Image (tube, rainbow, N blue to C red; front, top):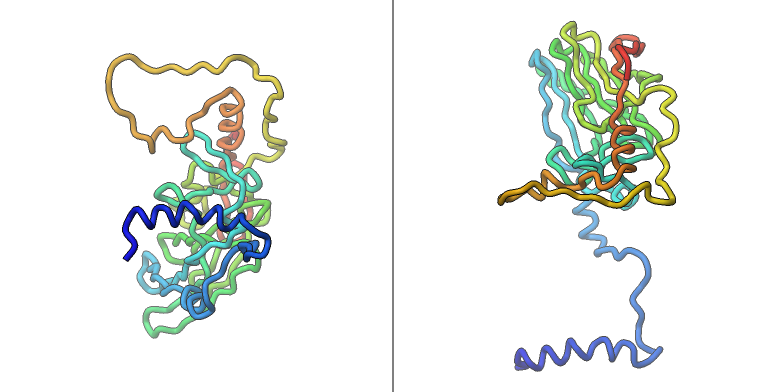
Amino acid sequence: MPNRFTATLLFAAIPAILASGPGLAQAPAGYQQPPKAILDVMRIPATPSPLLSPTRDRLLLVSMEDYPSIARVATPYLKLAGERIEPGNHSKHDTPGGYGIAPAVRSLTLVRVADGATTEIQLPPGGYAQRPLWSADGRHFAFTRVTPSTVELWIGDGATGALRQAPSVKVNQMFGGELTWMPDQKTLLVKTIPAGLGAPPAKPVVPPGPSIQEAGAGKGQSSTYETRDTLGSLHDEQLFEYYGTSQLMLVDAATGTATALGEP
């Protein structure tokens, strides 16, 4: 039986063996796939989780996507003071608990609790939907849909499952909490991208000044999570303000009509 020293020599010799001649097999290009049997198991839809309406007469069965695509994982994003934002659409490149890819809804089914009658909700094609939010009276639910260029707002009828998009609304997910039902349960308060926001601040070719960092006096420890992705330059500060600025909108759940509330 080879001992530890023999194994070490063997692994050390592998690079030289692989480089010794052109006749040896080369590593295949691209992403490697497991056998079909394993892929079939991985691609079985996850068991849906119930999302009961506050009135307890209906529920949504929410099936989530277990494995995001490489395209989603590779989407460029900015790291700004603990917030991870995709510049192409102002969507969160993060999970609610921090790190990872934002969860996506695979399918939605509306269930009437009294008799178990179900309605498959036809989600719009392209992009991906996110977890819905019931109104307190159970008459509507709302969710965001992320596309490469924007984050849309969609509102569903709690009785029929019919969906309506608020067409003029571009949601800003920078700080989370972008959807809130107002007390009348007929209106949504939404954080949106201000109209006429323009292009993001360009990174200066020449730094405006030296990089200056300060550390407070005294001893202590700091959490690496709370201080992750700190703003390191004036340009970072400008990006933080640009992507963090939102226009509050009141959106009518019945019509999708949006009305600006105050200034950005």
